[in-house]
Structure formats: C-alpha cells, structure tokens
Image (cartoon, rainbow, N blue to C red; front, side, top):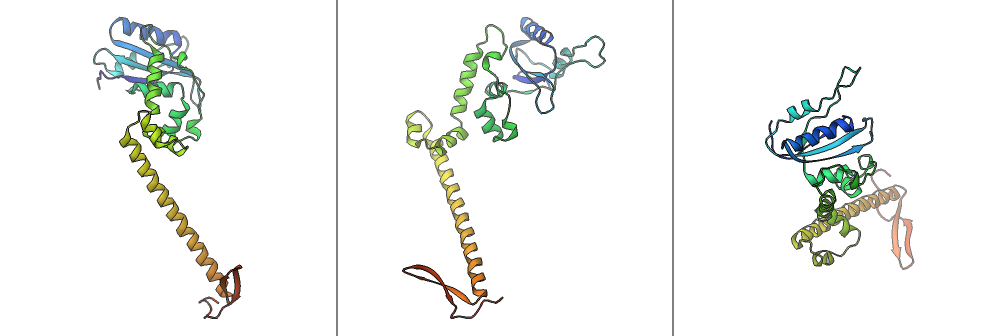
Length: 232
C-alpha cells in the first residue's frame, strides 16, 4: 500500500549499493532524507543495515524493495531488504544504537535487552540532516515516558522534585497512585500467604495434641486442653 509516512526496513545490501540508491532517491526527490546504521548479526541473523527513509511523495514500499535487489556475480539469489514498516523517528534512533534504557522499557530486559551497543555517530545520513540533534531529542522524549518516571520513583527520586523539574503533575500523580495500589495488593497477598502458613503450622501442632501459648517470655508449646484436630 502506497504511503507518504516514514518507513524503515532491514537491508542486507552492500554498503556502496545501499548508499548509492538512497542518495539517488534524495537527488530525484523521491525521499526527503534517510538514515541507516550497520549492525553485526546477532541471534542467528546476518550482518545488516537498519534503514529509515522519509518519503517526499506517496511511495509503494514494494517498488522500493524491488529497487534494492542487488545481484552479485556468480550468485543466483540477489541481496535485498525485509518488508518496509511504519517508523517513528525516536524509536528508530534509540533502537539503532541499542540504547539500554529504551531496550529495558521496550523489552523489559532479559535476552532481548542484551544487544551490542552502538553510537549515534555511526548513523549515516545526508549532510543536511543533523543526527545528533535528532538523537538528543529522542533521548529527551525517553526520559519523560511514564515507564522511565516510574523507574525513577522506584529508585527513590522524590515525586515533588520531578514535578518541580517540569514533569507533568497529573502523570506523576497517576504513577504514584498506581504504584501505591500495586504495593497494597502485594502486601495483602503476602499477608494472606503468611496467615495460611501459620494456620497450616497450627493444624500440624494440634495433630500431636499440643497447642501454642503466649506469655511474657514468648510462645511455648503446651498440652492442648481442647479437642485434637480432625486428623489427630
């Protein structure tokens, strides 16, 4: 389906071929700009480029894929790219460098959060495209996400200080309420679990005709004055 919105793909082309095509599309006013970065293959994937373009007009992504077919001498199957997908600049930039905070928020850590790190300076773009400014803008946006604010509060950052530093008061309050509710549910669950364990222990003691008595010196096992438990 034709689109004029930014799109991205993963390319397995050679560097000279890919850059030549992207520069040509800019020259022909097919796209306004592009960014790409080289990634070493991980998790069984081959070495590849992450590519993002901003169309200058409606484009058919399948036509773009056809134009990236790169035939190599002696090889039957050409190099190419994966299907194009909608792309948000901030998300693309932060994943392109495997930003640790972004991966933690997006994937929750674990194996998916363990990626080779890259630098924003490794991103290739036309001379008139300021990658550094775009990256700083992406990092700034990440710092103000609800997930990041919740992490800061969990780590001890005072909510009032966040608000005084410009964070949205409604967002901070909503996070605080959610965290308090979650803490209450967790404490309640822990209380019921402990209560259940104590009841099991009490039932086990009664099987031996004993009971628990508390005095100034603490708890003591004594002979039960009541009826033994049902399994005694």
